[in-house]
Image (cartoon, rainbow, N blue to C red; front, side, top):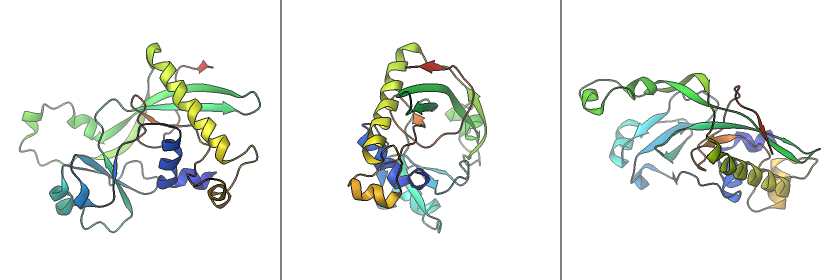
Length: 204
């Protein structure tokens, strides 16, 4: 199953089939018609990510990139990382905890009013330096469970209880997916894989 988690393309197909709302992706810089974020492939903790305003900004700042990357719509909201655990023995889904990442220097820049940032020669950096535990409002727990349950359901459809490889799963479905149940949530919008942290434990 790890090969499914390692592929951004397969992750997107997996979560889309589960009914999650996903940020729009662009195939190239000329398609950009809104603020986006450039994400490099690999587990680099946000290193090299760039906020891009429009197509012209992309050509000026990211057109030279040699590494593989994805162009993703920048969603403004509260980024929460929900940590799930699913037991196939008991057929039970649990929310283990939740957290948010602290990223430098973009979190510090967010504390400075936009007018005061004008003229500052500082480029945002999205390198993750730590995680902070958070508790979700009870009114939003039902939506969090729905998202997790849908991902588990699709994982079962694609890869049975004995698991599968990327090749075997693709033969079983034209829309392959994986069995991990953790993602970044913003009221149902997935934005990327998560890391673990402590927090409130709830069961279903």
